[in-house]
Length: 99
Image (cartoon, rainbow, N blue to C red; front, side, top):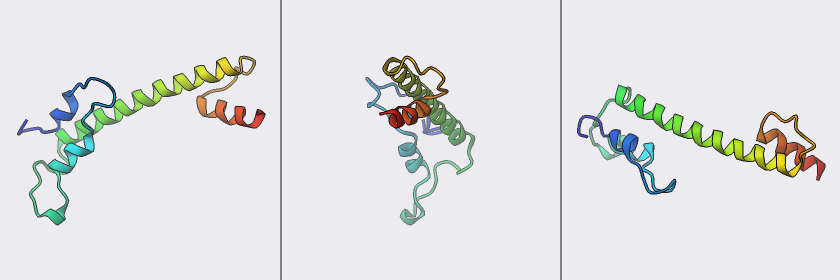
C-alpha cells in the first residue's frame, strides 16, 4: 500500500453501494493541497493515479449505464405505444411534453 495507496480504492468491496471509498478521498491524501505544506506521496501524473482514475470512470460509466437501462424500462412500461426512443432522457422529455 505504501507504493500505491490507490489500491485501497481499487480493491475495497463494501457491503452495499453506499459503502465505498471514493477515488477523491485517496487522491486528496496522496496529493494534498499545497496550503498544507505536505509532500505528495505520488506524482500528479503517476501511472498508479491514472489507473485508479480509469477504474473510477469505468465504475461510474457502469452505474450510469445501469441507471439508463432502468429509465428506459420505466418509460417503456409507462408508455408502451412509444417505442422509438434512443435513451431515457429522450423518453423523459417526450413524456413531460405529453402529460
